[in-house]
Every structure is written in C-alpha cells, then in structure tokens.
Image (cartoon, rainbow, N blue to C red; front, top):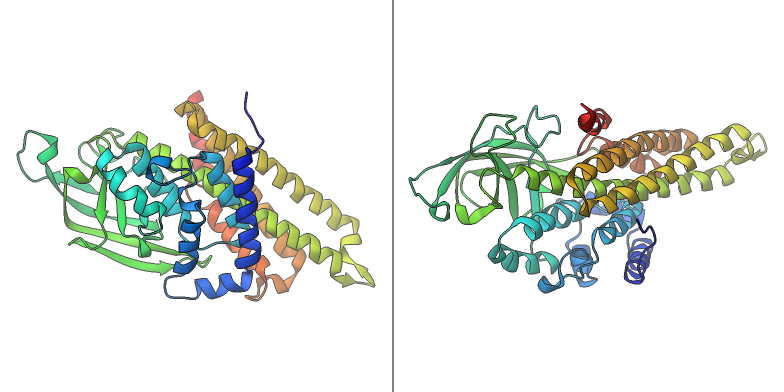
Length: 385
C-alpha cells in the first residue's frame, strides 16, 4: 500500500526547509544571488550542508540521513517556493545518486562525504546536440588506447561535446556519458566516466539561462581517463543513467510544485487587493473560475509528484511510466499556472521587480528541462507498442 503521509523525520525536514526559505531566501536575496558571477551563494550552500540537506537522501555511513526520495521531494518543493539557484538538483540529486548507487566503494567513500559536507559539487553531462532528451543518443566517444586484457588497467580517450550541462560552471567533477562501443542510439555500449574539472582537454562555455540560472556547453578534446574513473560497468551505463535521470525528473517536478504553489499564492493575494471599477478584481466571477482551474491543476500535480516519487524504488518499467506521467502533468500545469498567473497580474508581472514574472520564467524552463510533453508521451506509450 502506498503511504502518502510524511514520517516524523520528513515532517521536521519540511518545516526546517520551509522556515529557512521564508526567513533567509527572499525574492530580493534571490535576485542579488543570480546577478553574481557564479549565480548562487557559497555561504547558503554551506548552510545547506550544515543543516543536513545535502545528505538527506544519502546513506548514514557517509554522513547522510538516509530519509529516501521523499526527503528530496520535500526539499525541492520548498526550494521551488524560493526559486533557489544553488545547484542542489545537479550536485546532490544527479551526482549524489549516481555515485551512491553505481560507483564502487572506493569512489563512494572518497566523494560522498565531501559532497554531503558541501566541499564537492558534481554535474551531469549527458545531453548532446540533436539528442532530443534521449539519453541513449550519444555520439561522444571513449576509445581504448592500450591493449590491456583487464578492464582495471584500461585507459580511454574521450572526444565529443555536451550541451546544457546544468550548473556545469561550478562543478568540481563532471559525470559524462560516452559511447564505448556500438553506434549512436545503440542502447548497449554507453558508459559513464567521472572527470575532474581541471583535466587536460576539457573546456567550458558557460552561460546564463533565461530563468537566471547557469549552464555550460562542454567540449572534450582528447580527454584521457582511466578505468578507475568508470562508474558502473563498461558498456552498461544506460540503465544507470536512465534511473538517475528519472530521480532528477521527480525532483524537478517537486520544484515545479513549489514554484506553482508560490505563484498561485501571489496571484490570489493580488486578486484580493487590486481594485478595478471600485471593487477588488477577485470579486469578479470570471477570475474566480480561472483560479479554481489553477487550484485543480496544482492539486492534480501534487498527487502525480507523490506517486512518481514513490515509484523511484520500484520496478523500472513502472517507474518510467509514473515519472513520464508526472512530467506531462507538471509541464501542462507549468504552462497554465505560469501564463494565467502572469496574465491576471497584468503588465506589472513582466517587470524585473515583481516575483510573478520570474516564477513564470522558471516554470517555463522546468517544462523544457529533462523532457517536454511530447517526449514523455512517447516514452509513456512505449509499453503498449
């Protein structure tokens, strides 16, 4: 039976993050944050570590709390309310999950404590030009350069490029998906390597996305790696990548839930205070009907996010469907609540001084990240084809 209520520890975590966002992460603070060169606050990141949030879903053996996927959902929803720009999704959800679930013990023991303590950031580089969200569409290659008969002594040279590496500008290590055998779109032959940021041949083109966050395009020109940097098994990295991306999608959906909830609240407050024709505009029945539509979309999204989060520890085929179903619902709700929220605010919503327009931009970015509705509709019906 699926349990929808939070445990005592998860409830305490939810209250802690909500209180922090409300007290320490105002809209004005966020605007100053994204205007800096790195686009986030190292001081805030250290506070996340001190409060235990970076290790909330990671094992106690490495300094975490081990509260599971619901902890990630709780944290991401609260961060969505504040449009937090710190790289929690990329470093903790992507990086932490891959290392924890698929890396060998030596990599886990050396990296997870650093990540949980806030001393290490990790980014995931899997998307390529023309890949259309598909993690199996990989043309970046890793070619063996010696004739060792054992994988433990093997070296590889990586060539290719990756696009839209979220928070790549601040990552100390990059997890890169490469093709070690087979042709592009061959599900067999994809491997994952952990690469140091300062290794020779790795270059970054960093840029600001239109929602104020940061991303990078990465070029790999004869980057040499050893088999000790391999995560998981050679040629068998796709299933690991897909699972971690699903965890990222569930977390992103939870962030969207927080953003939509905050924008709904802002819009409702505006309707209660803005006057037109001698009365508050919230008294007009047409706007009341529209707010009901937004509320229903928000609550439907909440249910889908919970179901998707609970599916993360289940069967892979069920997980894929639940995650895609949630992302479809979230994408549509992002467009509806974002557009309607801005429209009901009027022209003031598109100014930099008002939070509503920034929530709209973030929601639009979320809808286009890790798969649009067309992609996830296709993935959802795979089971029936």
